[in-house]
Image 1 (tube, rainbow, N blue to C red):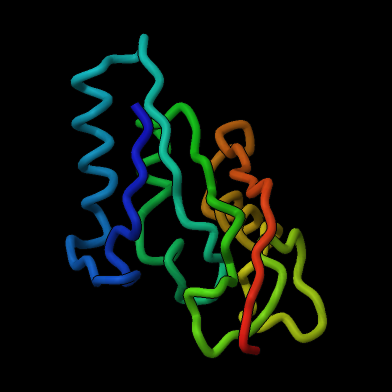
Image 2 (cartoon, rainbow, N blue to C red; image 1 turned 60 degrees about the vertical axis):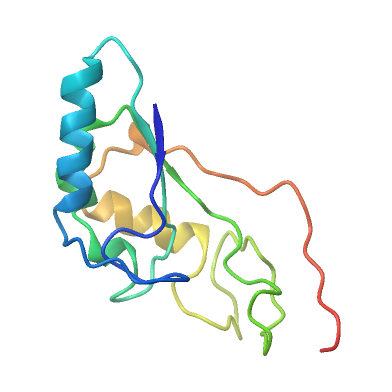
Length: 136
């Protein structure tokens, strides 16, 4: 079972107000239902910014119910933001002029590990594609 909840206790196209513990409660129920003999994984935010989407959820508390987290370390920037900025959609590290601090793979993984999530439970989601902009 792979969970892709975008975005627990945070805003995307709509805002979820289920609370900081809802994600862990869901995963606990799934682990109880499927047992330890089946994989339970989850695609999660890679927003490593201060006060960002990682901070909105108790990912460390939920780690005991998961085999792997799959941080979506892609699409940090894209054409859905009509006013830009144009930027690499999957930066590995920060760089001078990055439009949003914490929107890079290093920041996300460092934050998740800093919360106590074991590195062996972190698998990078990688976008093997390019993005383009028009009218900028």
